Length: 557
Image 1 (spheres, rainbow, N blue to C red):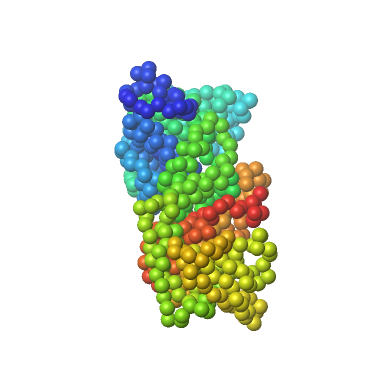
Image 2 (image 1 turned 90 degrees about the vertical axis):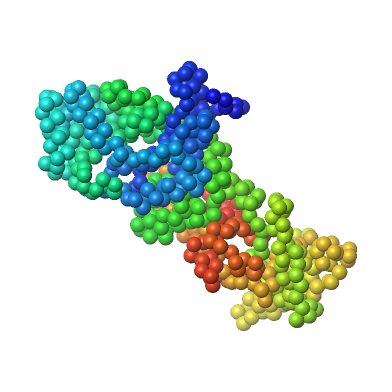
């Protein structure tokens, strides 16, 4: 196999290359194995990129497998969302499987363990077993039911499958070592009774394998060469390997890597579910959520997520990654791809008094200075335009400190003319209602013959041609950097200003035909995506990210 050599390899790549060089495997097989009990988040995106990326890098294969062994929590809705998320990131799986595909084979494996004297049916409840389990430094005691014969255990296990017992009445345990310092090796549960319909198998089964039993055996059935798990499964590895040895099946190798922990973010399905069910957010795809569906709706691009995953790399120990690295990846990608448009979020009318009332002029605007092939667009210019209220001060600082508009100050309207402020009018509330200016006809952008030099350039939209839109301005959902270190309810640290809705914005008319999913840069403001809530008569834009990281300026820790 020919692979392009990197200047440096992460520790997983080093293991793979060593295995291949020794002939342990002809090619690699990985898998991405989510449980369909919720929507995937940015942490899963790292795992997706790792598993599928390694398969691509080494000309191997990667399966998508749903670990669906907890029927009361799983749903086809989550299965569909997971498929969509993996495809959105740009990956194709070689095979799609479910742990439930293997229920009969797993049952057979369990029977083999019973026949070998390596598993037994236990009547103790979980609370009763916990009392005899011991601690990491104190050995546990054997269950009263541990010495049943293989024949007795096999009959009881068959009766469990037949539905003769109630939930929790019996379990099947591995018979390993009740004095092991690894608590996962102290006779762990392999099967439990659950009289619950499954999203794929319906009521066919009332016993379901535990994660520890189903996961490794499913890996082996698929002949996964390298089973990549996050670090919390490191203590499960001895059990993973014990089961493979005892069953004498394909020896998949489990390798652990650090999970993705982002600052100002929670990546726990349980906590994300709390946010959804408590209506702290609008749903799993709320653009403030770290779910893949949420960041997709907000406007993050697949390439930016993949670039981020590559940049942070693969570590052996947990840590916290600054969310600013993800935000930088999004800015960098959108800067190359997003067309520029004019969007005025806090508009105030500017009247060019020496421009004829009935005159309109079509100007040429550059769509993307980073992409020449994006070309230009027409921008209508007329007597009345909107500029951003923040671009005008009635009593501005020194011209050396204030490059925008003020009485008797000159600025250029981008792609148009240099104007000079001649006055303004206030409303009854004291707010600036209108600004008046005159333009210099010799200063047309690209054709300027005036010799004038101004430092300020303002965005604008023609009032006659502008469209109103709803702008949803998003900020980080939490105000605390490390949510792993808090002692109280994580919801106490929600940012009350994580969403602000702006209904005043005026956008250039070219956006009237924008479609859901379109992404643009409002010049001097940030990047925005057309939201699914948009209608023909009412456009809604989600702010993906500002042009610069202004979190510190707003008081972020």
